[in-house]
Image 1 (tube, rainbow, N blue to C red):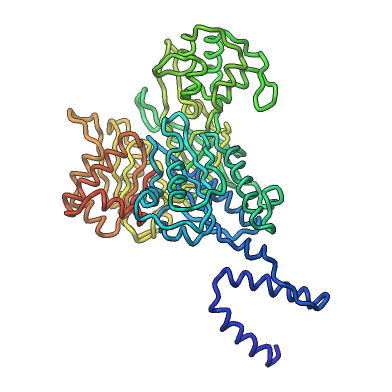
Image 2 (image 1 turned 180 degrees about the vertical axis):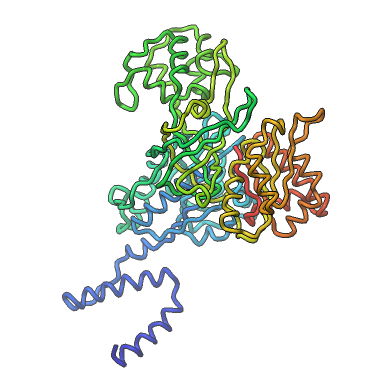
Length: 560
């Protein structure tokens, strides 16, 4: 390097340090033009206007309860980067609303769970944008993809809220909101393609989705699962009527972390399909059109939802009100039904998700699940849950179609941090993975488990493992609640209140709170118990404190 060039480089560095990131990108295009001109005609050319247009920062923001919204957001972010956009991918957890105005373009993916409720990681931002403290977003543009389940009355409500609140804050819609049901892949892909096209129109050198090619190796996904061999399956309980199974699968090429879920892509049992055919008096071999192809009615029904019936299905098939699976409810239909009408009215069978109960550091090349059998009788016939019934019939050597559903908002903290795990029933599954991980990594942080079920004798899942961890000191404290072992029912929320003073001390020491399991009752009761004990022992508002913990990433729930 010449002396002149050395001096020039130093001067340029001093000037460049004062420029913004957008200015630097513009300058990069300008200098490239100078270089090309120098090598060619020798004339100076102006930097193309499209370079500045393409530099609009794009924020891909997601709020996710089960990981679906996160997965869609990551897929879109990768496609946007490949198209040449300046992309930032972020979770809503702890996201500062004022940063929205820095983005210029916002792609927001959010799910709705329960009765129109926002995901845990989206609550704070959802509330702030709906308040007087919402930032001025008049210089931004946005598009919302809302995920939901149309069997609930407030379908995609959280996404609708964000769409309205962003617009109320002055942001301009790039696209109208798209609402995706349980089978969200096609809608998500259409949203991605349309949004990339809209961004490409504003910045010509940004590639549309059709122009973007991916060289990444395909990974097991919901749409493209992998085959996993069953290594072992055995009951964890001994009493009939409340069976819980431990399942071990051989997955040498599958990558996962404690806190993730495994999706099982199952089909309906032959017995349930035959019961539907008997009830409708339709021919199993009758051809129907499914996804543009002709298939047997029997085969088409194998991939349809016959257990949890969607309200639209109930209306279209004129089914009886109340509970029950398709065979018994369709008998009340008064009018005749064609095979194609039946198939068109039924929703596709969704995969079943289960929290992973193992750490890859302990169970290398394997994944373990804890699955409660859903079973009942209807019309003197045994009925079972789709995936749990399948698992109960499995033997070593059988195969399942599976994929990993990442859950980055349900991760262990730093190794020295204390954790309080609340997981009654099969909600204990991810905490077994947590303990295996902490044992394998020799993490010094304290661990406290609250576990509950019906009976000590039958339902203490992984009892010997918990007792070993407790005796060896890896588990610092174990609080148990077996609801039917005494006259008055005792649940984990009761144990939380009894241990309130020590729980509060752990929280003061920086403990992370984890809750896994039933979201309809247990999670709400546990939340109230936590709020009460915080108010009692901390002399502060419990709800406010829990919201602060959530914002800090220290109150984490995996509920369903």
